[in-house]
Image (cartoon, rainbow, N blue to C red; front, top):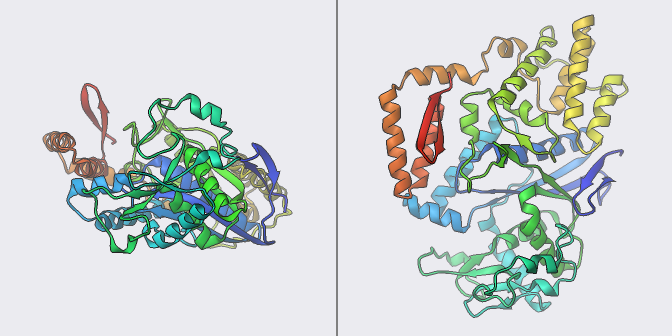
Length: 470
């Protein structure tokens, strides 16, 4: 196998071969599921969707695990704000996530574990760490990991303990022997919900975020995996801490390859919920058809930063039209096999084998489309559709795409006419009142409702401005 992957651990491109020949085990850190997913989340899940697709296209069997964090401080806070149970909130948000990423043709993982289903395994892992002197019980009831006792801490992120100490606070956080230590088990606060399933030797509480992934990864894939990945923001401290606790407990490497996706940026800032500068997947899909959004995400390499703008999405839609024009003579469902000895297919494979190089692979699709337009070759048209299918593209009926029947803007136009300016202002006022009352769930629902009607909001220090997308 000629595939090379950029390994964050070594900071180099390395030839990839799985631990067990022909079988790939991949774990990706998924969503903390308290809200709707934004386009940055879609970019991360899209990247590993492409990884899974290409590994399978290369003849590998893939066991892909992408977890769901369904217990967390933010989840508890949001459930309290909405006066619903944690389970009601997480079930609602998981269903919404599946709907949104399904629209983008992101294939489901082999296994999608929920953290709350693996608490007993987390407790077992903490017990092993305690036996090895890599966990201690603090006075406040927490159980912490002593970072200084794990000799290779900082290897993934390239951060030395001295560098980490340089930025720490003078006061040591409650219960920690060292500011760098991180929590394995969080003692319950009086205001937090209890769950009898979580009874533990450490008293009432819940697991820390990092131990959740170590336990789920180990239980679903084994002690060592081929690929472990997630967004670039997880490299430190989450993945660094995963390595420390997993390898501290097992003595084996957690993963051979570490992969991290680049950020989506808006106005040169990372798109994130904490900054409030994000667009949910649903908002974007209210303006653009799903295949255009997928194509927009795939045209950038997964490790690079991606700038979000309507201009780039409009350009993506125009690019897809060029490709579909070359497919007008090919019926959907036509022969989708690929002859990898064909020069176009060989170039496509070479691009994908070099760290999943989707920009170069997409360039091959355009070259192939140009050749189809010159020659009218049905064989090349079929090859174009087949190669596009490897990336989850070009599988719609060309006429539907070219005539705009897949465009979200048509529905947005209809919805926009169904609400007048006074109605928009009324909903914006309700959203503002919800935010003042810290009912952020209600505020988000109003924003999504307006987006579905073709009305986009932009918050600033001077208030909220709106515009119709049509």
